[in-house]
Length: 205
Image 1 (cartoon, rainbow, N blue to C red):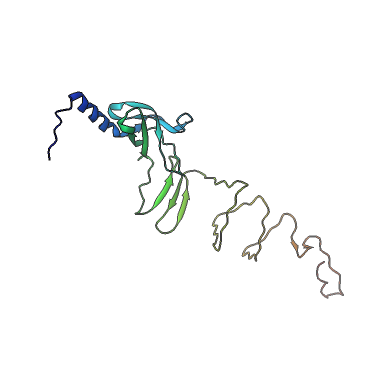
Image 2: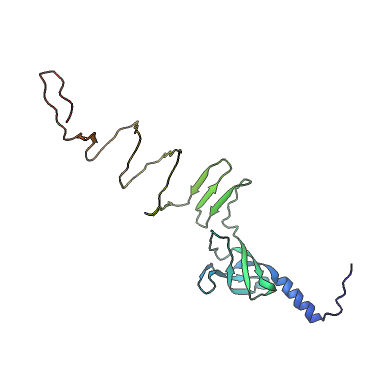
């Protein structure tokens, strides 16, 4: 099959070629991305073909996930209707921080600081950081574990009261800086009725 383009001028063909080139283009973030109220999305300054810098380029991201790639990240941008003035970034990548030890099917949420949440092949979920990481659960929320088990190999500090609805077994010592009460009887302040010499005392009360 052959095509006859004789009815089109050179300018028209060049115009169509330019639109085709602008449809999909690679880019590099010139600036850190940030939220832009006017664009109602995160934006960046994007360097594309021949180091042409496109200002305020929008990032189109998946629902439920938001990220702000850093300067130097690479991207794929679409020129809507072949325009170089109406662009949207639809894919980003940064090989400076991308994990390299993933097995098939594994997923990692990561950032430039070395923080990560890993869903591993062996059914483990790893949370890691290069520094001390803090996980905050605000006062409106709670963590519920049903029919599971918590195994803590490090020390634990609890700054509020603890209620246990089942039994408590401790293999080590129990130390209290205050008092211990069992069935309403104080360990520090309970009393016994004295018996005869060598006889046991009465139960505490």
